[in-house]
Amino acid sequence: MKTFIMKYKKEILILSILNLITYIFILINPILLQYIIDNVIMNNEKKLFNLILIILILSYALSTIASFLSNYYTEYVNIIIFQEKSSELISIILTSHKYMNTGDTISRLTDNLRLIINLISLIIPKIILNIFVIVVPLLIMFYIHTKLTILILTPIIIYIFISYIIGDEIEKIEMKILKNNSELFSLFKEIFTSKEFINSFGIEKLFLDKYNLKTNEYKKNILNCAKITSINFSFESIITVIPILILIIYGGLLIINKELTIGKLALFMSYIYLIFSPITELSMNWINYKKIKPAIIRINELYKLNKNTKLSKDALNIKKGKIEIKNLSFSYENSKELLKDINIIFYPGLNYLIGKNGSGKSTLLKLICRVYNPHKGEILIDEQNIKNISSKSINENISLIFPEPYLFEDTIYNNIILDKVDVKKKDVENIIKKIKLDKLIEKLPNGYNTYINESGVNLSSGEKQKISLARILLKNPKIILIDEVTNSLDYKTTKEIYECLNELSNNKTIIIIDHNLKNLSNGNIIKI
Image (cartoon, rainbow, N blue to C red):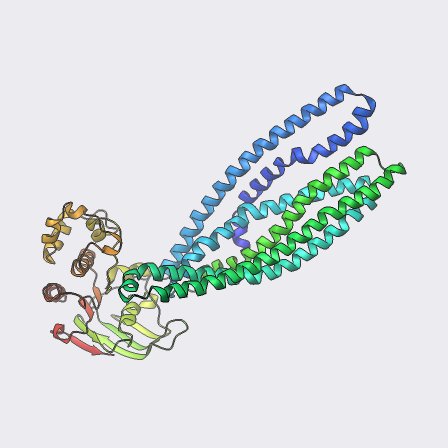
């Protein structure tokens, strides 16, 4: 976090200076008021009065301009830091081989990151301003009358100590609130992505009950936080009254005894009101910092993913395409071991991977294309350990087709070419004909430019899988991994896909997970 703050020290400094300038008028106003009462009014100095009036107008104008610049620059800093850091974190997440809960990750990238940005653009500059606005008036007050200043400060110091203790309690509760937040994000994702399933089974109440359970816990923690914060506000009202009473009673006696002038009493009164706001704000900023501290921990956990990911520049050199799994073991976080001491060899050509549901077949494919890293053992491709190969080279040489293809809300053409913007349209058309998707595209009103709705709901399962296969043909990787793509397809579409795969297997290594034994032919069958 120290590195994070130091990176934006220039922005913090500029915001702090702008904030300090906004307080020039407020800060010098009591001094000028005291001078007017004790010197101008009492001595009838009209020229001095005009000069002081000009100084007040100029300081007010300067404060107003600084206030505008401060507000604008704060928003500028907010968006710049969010853009930089969110992009940085997304890059880390995309290159990490560790499983992450989607809702929790979204929560960290949105709510948690914005809290930390507020620390940079609002809280730290405000703390600097608060300290300045408190210290300068106090120094002036000490200079005028030390004993009176100490008496006024006593209840304020007690309040600051109480706020310090309250901040620790708030930090504990805020960690629970952030956890609740991420759980709610996960539940929202589950509800919205499973809406059709929920409706078809009539289990709306089950998910509403889940939601109410999570929100009740969230509500409890929010109210606990509000209760503790309210206690802090209650003490704030006490410190507002006591120093004023001390000033009126003791300050009045000092005036009677001619130890203090009326102008100086007015200055004390103005400065007491002036420092009340930054003292209470300093207290709130301390509490806000304590609220942000759990968010800092959660964002740092994302940065640690980068430290745990060993980056390599080695390229994968595939001559044959033999894949050897040696003594491999793997388990997902907080779950039992899914794969244990697996030893398998996949040869160039067609390979079929079969086994019971839950035996780890899909996970094994994800390990081969390094979506995850094994906890133990090795994966060798032509005797090269893939843990030493760069992610870029892995992605160039290995492709995985998922059971449910990932389709973006874009045109069919852009869903096929993905990032290959320089590809020739003729090459795409040849691939489309090869997998017999050309007839569908011809029927569509906008052809290749037909827009695919969310998750491809306007396409059939076979059409979606053919688009997914078209991507692979265009990419032309050496190794193709296929995870149960034909389960929901009709006989004709399945046959067309397998004909294409058989043709490809002449110069590639293809591993297919398929539960339908009728589809298994002309290949190496491996059971796990």
